[in-house]
Length: 485
Image (tube, rainbow, N blue to C red):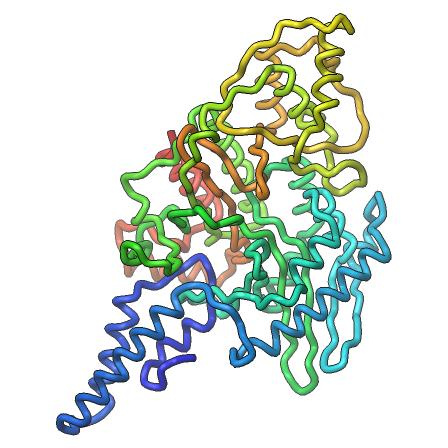
């Protein structure tokens, strides 16, 4: 897959969506390697160098994007095992649904399934199955997406991370290889992660859906996680950004105009732009503050805020819904005891049955069939917000527009678009934004502290990534504050 004369391309095989390298830098490096390979060999040598250089150019152009992992691909065998193992693991959950109340044993559970050429271990299966259920995901659709006949996709970038990134063919789920330390970190903090999502069902934190390990005879164990893609569905996304709130090494050359190559841009590329949300801006600022404070308590840094946008269709803009419909769609959102870790109705937004709206109108007008309905401007069609265990709600008939807004803010819930990935989507007046926080495994260790002091000497007066968790939290919150309106 890589040019034999360009070692830097080998690092591109180990990928992370958060740090895309610029094409010119890679190509310049390849050219230097070609020209320094030995003494000049005349016209024939020059022609060979040029052909190899342009071959490397075409190859890099292809690699900086998504492509299918076919039978000739180096990861075909691994991804085939992943598919087979995940299908069996999810089938086990289908046959043995998670309990309504999770126990300590569920968090510590390890299940090993033996296949022909490998073994697959699944960690804390009931916990992740419970989270998937809370997101409105059926096990059958999850299983189908992960294990159908279509090839996985590989996303290529140039990152310092040695992880490999794969996507399901429908681009709904990411599979990322992790080292043992990262997996242990996630599992050791899984309970408080779940509690955070229980308290803030619309958290921007990436949703981890499974942790697994493949054992292949005479080879190293391979850990990997499954997570929900923030950029889904991506068919109309026209720009993607990875934001860390700093400036050092935070520029990426955009793809050429009209190119289909996927490039994830960085902080400096975003300068001069804004995320325009109008009435949703306070919610986003507050949720970013809540999520980054949680990560600060975990003593982590170097996480990224992913941002993408696409223009809204004309019929998606400035839609008005009746107040009755607005309330029924947010009815479950203001329930203080909503919980993604318990059984019940799915907590993710979805379609609201028309009979529910009719019932609400009946409740509001006391059964007379007449009520005063006000129109409320919202960014797009709205979906159902999280539900949870039965508990006391305020009678619908007593709610006013102002009270509803106050409840919304108090519970940190929000109106969500009727969309396939609503937990990571916010609609502004003109654009739909995809937002999520990823890469939350970097602990502020002694090694990172040394790196911080080294970078202070190397980049005096400049903002770089490696800072203490409190400083990282404040800086990212400030970036969102400065770049939204």
